[in-house]
Amino acid sequence: MAPLKITVIGTGYLGATHAAAMAELGFEVLGLDVVPEKIALLAGGRVPMYEPGLEELLAAHVAGLPGSTGRLRFTCSYEELGAFDADVHFVCVNTPQKHGEYACDMSYVDAVVESLAPHLTRPALVVGKSTVPVGSAERIAVKLAALAPAGEEVDLAWNPEFLREGYAVQDTLHPDRIVIGIDGERGERAEKLLREVYATPMGEGTPLVVTDFPTAELVKTAANSFLATKISFINAMAEVCEAAGGDVVKLAEAIGHDERIGKKFLRAGIGFGGGCLPKDIRAFMARAGELGADQALTFLREVDSINMRRRGHMVELAREAVGGSFLGKRVAVLGATFKPDSDDVRDSPALNVAGQIHLQGGQVTVYDPKGMDNARRVFPTLGYADTALDAARGAEVVLHLTEWREFRDLDPAALGEVVTDRLLLDGRNALDPAVWRAAGWTYRAMGRPRA
Image: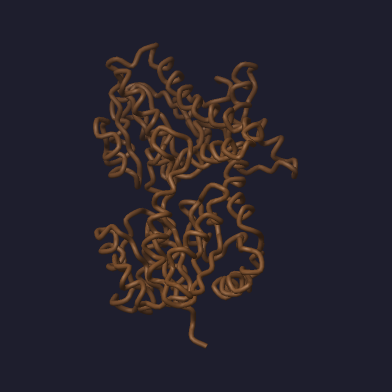
């Protein structure tokens, strides 16, 4: 039997990774996007974002590249997609936060359904991977049935993604779980097809959870809400530690030994950001309100509040460190992306802190290993340097705000030679205080005693 033919609609961070991974698993894949510049990059084996291992995976499969399998192609045409005659169509478009609201913007998903449905001229399975408000799949299934050519069997499944930026290739090829939401008895064919799609990771032991539409939609937002809560919890403990004279690092170490709690994501700092966690928990609250269950998620408002408060607290620490005013002060910021191993600066705590200091009169210079171009587009008025040493040159205070390995490997003595004052604020609690203090630095971190 011939391998399945798959389309992936939307070739951003999620879609480009999924398309390349499907080709790696042996399927013939056609990726579609409405942005010609993005398609041109991908067709040349290049990616419009930084994600470790993705460009190499693309090069191994994009048609026309030397040595590739030729299993992966890209297009901007729904007509070409229809002629491709695929068995499975994955929807991987963005679902951003609505402007001025907490709610999720479903316009991109709806546009895909409206453009795709008329081209489904054979039995097919549409699979949603985008993070959507609960109830969306049921609505989309009705819309697909109404717009597809008469008599064609078109099924829908919801298959949420659980990618971590920096580990997306690994998470797609070797996921820790696969969730499939199907529509009762009608979902039997959908489940069979997706078992075929994911046969390789399932053969490696990845568990499969088959459920209904609402549960599958809730899994991603519930998981992100739990993670956000854990991060904000340890940041709340950092606030208490500062007030009481405790050490949040030792506190996290101690409670992390409890297997019911675990050690992961218990590092206090300036909080979470990016294109998923903040907007997903806000959309979850908005949807719960629409369903009349808003009281169930009121705790997420405090989670969000704690997270945003951390950014302002870092600005206050930096202002205090330079004498109470940023006017005329040179501030070095190490980090621009919201996390390491990514070039994503969406809702980046690091850039937010840098921007606040700049607006208060500080002369801010930023350096990031991968996020410089994106940072310049978001905050063109900040200063930027080509290296950490250049960013720190003449600085009265250095802020470590993104946990890149390059920053952990910095030589404190060498950095100390170029600054005006050896004053370091570690916004990620990731550097070794003893090493920096031994090199003559005043080291401060959130939730820790001042030695």
